[in-house]
Length: 261
Ligand code: PEP
Image (cartoon, rainbow, N blue to C red; front, top):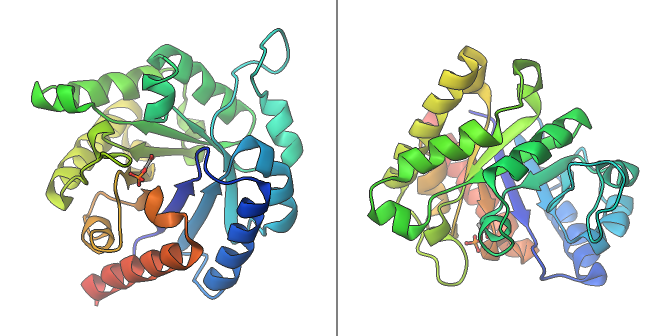
């Protein structure tokens, strides 16, 4: 079976108590999974991270931050430094989520600086990319993915690739108004992404995990994860209930196992 990745960004939805309750429950439910083959991760709000890292076994569920500044110290009101995240012992930094790009105006260049800083500080950099509905309509999705990858990864070297994950999250597929991408469409774009990674880094680029995100649910998770170029699922709403997320992980893993046997 290929190595699988399942994770969720809790956005601005759960407070400290809700996050710890959720993590305790999810840890219990997923304890028996084969953790060498299945990587789980949760990305809570900044205010919950300290408590979350105190109660979570990161060999079982890795923790991440939703954003990070590229500088270590300085006049950056409202920002969080890589050193501050290191203090918390978290493993992953999510960068370039569509809400950061489209609501907060983060550019590919800024995201590229953050990716480099995250890698230099020993974090896994989870770079999110994806085209908007308009870009899809104009038929320029592949070009957008190419620009996001080439700029976002422009400072990354081959030695850092083992700490790089990509999440393909088409903007039109995300959130309450999103429509999930079909398995075929997602596979087609993951193939494009894998080819660009190979073009940028040669053979080692092929090993970078590429996760799909955007209205993943219990019904479509199995079909998506069975696609050859989809290594994992980055889930929003359908993961915020621990029982539901546990079920989704198990159903999706089962779908991959069935395909192998
Ligand atoms: C997201 O916002 O990154 C996301 C994948 O959300 P949802 O699954 O709710 O569409």
